Length: 126
Image (cartoon, rainbow, N blue to C red; front, side):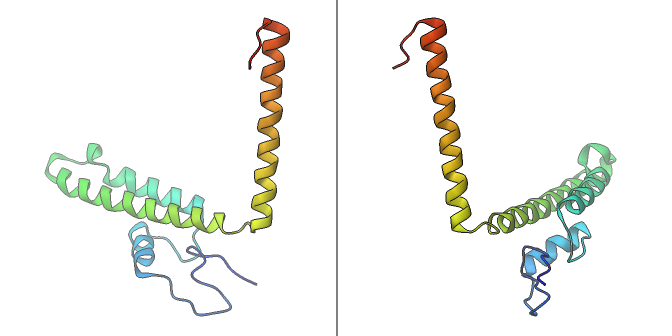
């Protein structure tokens, strides 16, 4: 069974190493290798409240500003990583099926709008 952790770089069946930048971001936010999106949000909020420049005293504002940038950068990196992992879970066949479904939905919507204009407003939409 495959355990998805840190953008699928770590697999329980192999010893694939998590890239250093991902490990560093996890370390900044205090996340375990088995993190998920809710854990990421919770860790970010906890540290953001602690290091937000508006909440720090005047003497530590510059230090807090830099730490906050570092925390936000780590969050963005891990969110991007998580989203890319989610987009890889669909096969090409599933993507084509979903695309066709959305095209059909858009066509039905356009037909509805055209019918509304022609029947209710008496305007030819074309």
